[in-house]
Length: 245
Ligand code: ADE
Image (cartoon, rainbow, N blue to C red):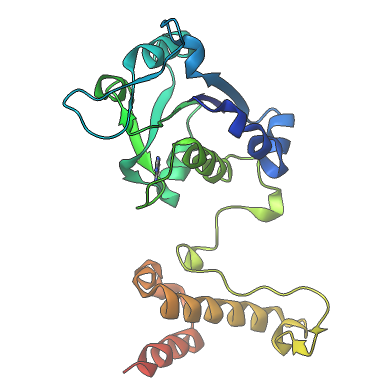
């Protein structure tokens, strides 16, 4: 997948895009990132990219000209799926990330200041927010989106680390994990994980996932497909839900 990023702060990206899985995906040729500094496209004498809002008000607005010129240079035929990161966009979900991962070419526009001239916004195909809070710019959201999408691109994660969970647990919270040593500062790992009984381990994990989800994010329980559960799991769930009543 080719990802073009239009930003006023390209220097924010290389650390994140170059490290860990994203760095390796680039080396493998699975991901290609191109950073474009919107300021380079400004036709004003001082390379301005923002101006006062018509109608008054606080803050500055990103001017249309540098963004249009940058789009003309980077994506002249509008071949890319153009995404702008903005708090007013649709909130990013796993389902959206999975859909975006199927694209061949994505262009991300990062906003700054108080906003982007609406005529530039109209050149985009979709608007995405990473949550109901306002950041100082769209750069961190763009990096979050790239990271989230890349987990669904074949080859980015190792074969043993698939982003697709088993169907029963899709959309639930993860069970707790432990590694060696089995005892650390007097704290012990649950016995069931040490005895090598894979059916018992799988059930324990499933039920811990149910417990955490029920306690912390009860609204996610709607994602659980109960048809695939055995009688132990059903009893566990019934008891869990009864505890509060
Ligand atoms: N720009 C500023 N805040 C944002 C957010 N929450 N999501 C996407 N872009 C943003």
